[in-house]
Image 1 (cartoon, one colour):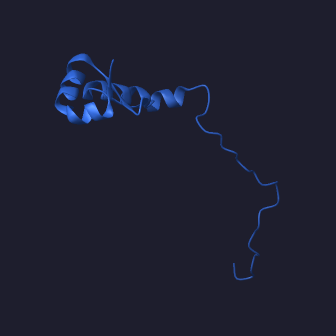
Image 2 (image 1 turned 90 degrees about the horizontal axis):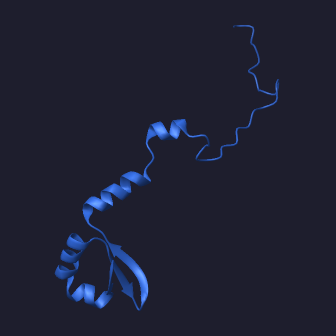
Image 3 (image 1 turned 180 degrees about the vertical axis):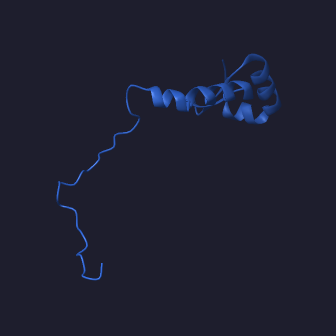
Length: 87
């Protein structure tokens, strides 16, 4: 993966994009620190699909993805409407 300073990536964007399409992901730095990566669209779509679990895998998973606390009221503590004589 080639590293491009931000100013070079901006000034030579067409070359930057062509290099990405031919060689693969290209890293962009800002003030020497890694800032972003340009990837070809096919690779981006593959990464997106891999990051999203299917419904089947979610349903078959051994563990829940979120913790849900269910509060069950104590037996007999539900509020009830008074029974009127007309009913």
